Amino acid sequence: LTITLANPPLNVLSLEMSETARRFVSQIKSDPEMKANVRAALIRSDTVRRKGMRLSNIFGAGGDIKWIYDEIYRGLWWWGSPVQGNELLESTYGLLNDLADLHIPVVSLANGLTLGGHLFLASAGISVVTASSELGAPEVYVGYYPNMGGTFLLLKRLRKSLAKLMAVTNYRMTGVEAVQYGLADVLSSDANLKAIEEFVSRQARSGSPIDEDHLKNEIR
Image 1: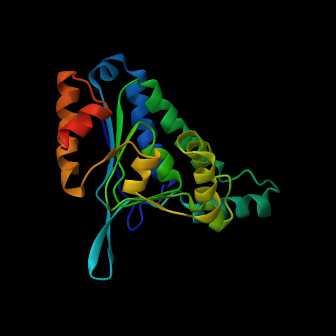
Image 2: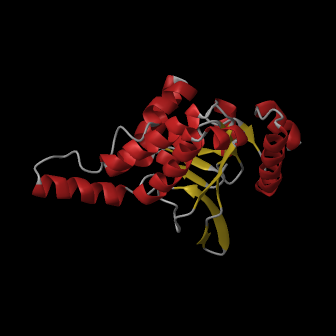
């Protein structure tokens, strides 16, 4: 099972993107024959953006904050209720829960910008980062806090002082720092990501193990 994030230029997590992935994963979950044939999940992105004279990778810049704001504003204006806009959060949590219910290895290739909701998505299983990765939780800067599960994730993965630093200052970790401090699991080069995709596919087809140690051995 491969989930490719594609909503350029920044791959913001829209309701449509989340719902499309969730419907497919739910279909697998409810079909015993399909479920038996899916042995691993890979979350990846092909999106790049130009910064000056070079291209940079984008895993994702978080949830579609503009859409959430518009929905909340519309709810307050028309119905007097601030609960509009929760659909994106519910859909994303549902996607992660459905992936967990498949009881299969989930590998995320979080190269490039990995912010907000995408940081939470990248940590659904084994998170692979590279030198191009930038991991952060910038929601406090746009007044949307607590964020899409990132608060819980930071405290679960990092010591309290580092979790607080990322949560309230918009500090972005490099891929090297993320593995060093426990926010991510495996450090790779961008050039090796294709080999990791092929390894995950090969292991899944043969029913062989997919874990951090096997991934680290593959990229040495």
